[in-house]
Length: 175
Ligand SMILES: [Ca+2]
Ligand SMILES: [Ca+2]
Image (cartoon, rainbow, N blue to C red; front, side, top):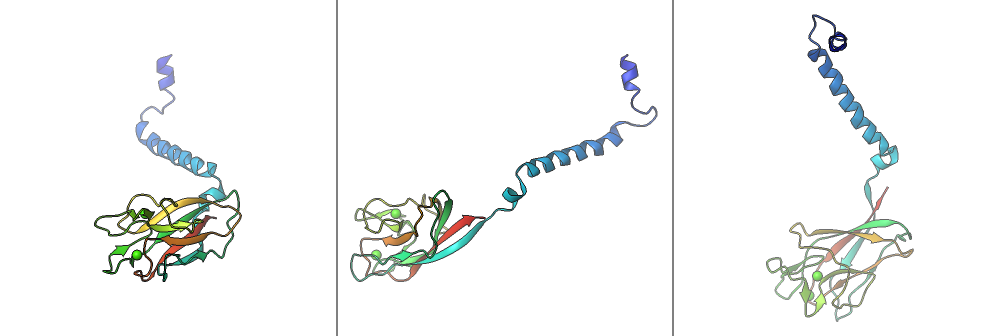
């Protein structure tokens, strides 16, 4: 009986060689099936910038200048916020970014204030949105759940009149 099973292969030809491309084809088919399972919509969705805010770093006193998004962020939708850029943040032009200042020391706080871009909290203090660990690219991203409102962003700092320039805050939506 074992011999009869073996006779399914054409005697005299080498069954391994013709079989090899067939196995490869099945592999490709399997991959295609996985991609199809994601659905056409899922496959083409990408994060698209839907709004760009300029965060002014200077203020004459201790009240930061605020910036509001043009777009309203829908409840039930998870957006992505991307903060980027650098600016001189001290009288000696030590640089800061969206979360840290002095890139050698990588200071997260200044005088008890969580330095950096705050979203939906305009009163500088020790708590705000967390942009994560220090990045040498000075680009930070975090998910954001829409609240049915526009977002408001400010810079948290302990002194504003020694700042110059702005930071960029982008709102991204998966579509
Ligand atoms: Ca400052
Ligand atoms: Ca910080």
